[in-house]
Figure 1 (tube, rainbow, N blue to C red):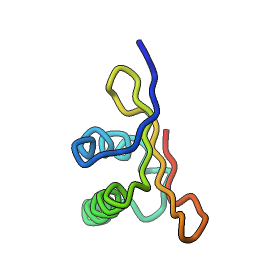
Figure 2 (figure 1 turned 180 degrees about the vertical axis):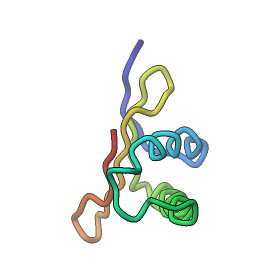
Figure 3 (figure 1 turned 90 degrees about the horizontal axis):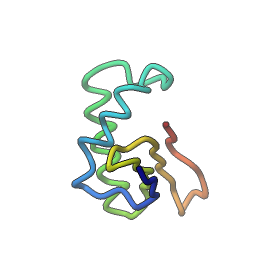
Amino acid sequence: MSMKIEMGLECDIDNWMNLVYKVKDYFPGLETKEALDNHKNTVLEFMSQKSAICTKHDDKIIGVLLFSIDNNELCFFGC
């Protein structure tokens, strides 16, 4: 049972979104399937820019972070 922090990769997207589905009620704007699909596309874009970090416990994602270097801001955080 080890925990590791690593860059989120496209191959992580389903596991990543499983966590987002669990915490979506705490984030206004993620109430609909369309909004969640848009968020998924946003996550994939952040992943391609190497601006997505996840925490894994036994290969299950238990924390996610999207950040913008250009804007010096955290864009999404869930655990």
